[in-house]
Length: 176
Image (cartoon, rainbow, N blue to C red; front, side, top):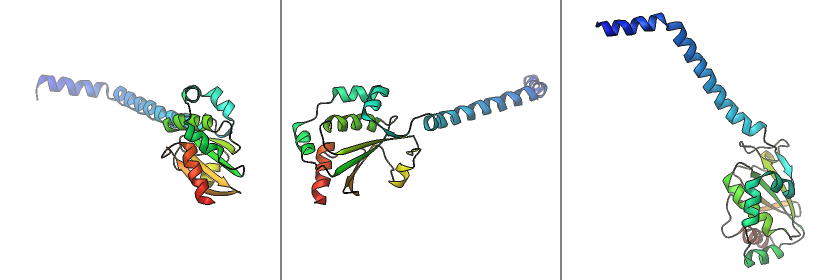
């Protein structure tokens, strides 16, 4: 064995306890950081029903996208044709880029709609404090659940094929 290798082994033997302690501390810090990252998003984020006003006040990305969106005439016409007995439950995540894009567009298009709209905020695990997302079997965000006379008649999941208003009108028309 060379003198250099002997020095390495001697160094490792001499500082074995300190090296092990540093390795354990580094592992604990890394594990804690991972846990904090996952649990922070789920535990400290408000979940459950939220009003459009509060959502737009509390979430700058949503407010900016709401202000910058201009609904198409075809979407506004479609929204106007949706009946009073339709309600739409919107399950979304404030952390979700699809929600940040689609929910403000939906809100802007439905601002004068007679449809009853409920916004339900979810955590990163797609759950809420009341268990509504689990009961509705929500897997993706946003999910727009269209309900007529108390029964689900369809969904728009993540991104509409055309616009939210036109897709929801198509669901409504198929259920007639």
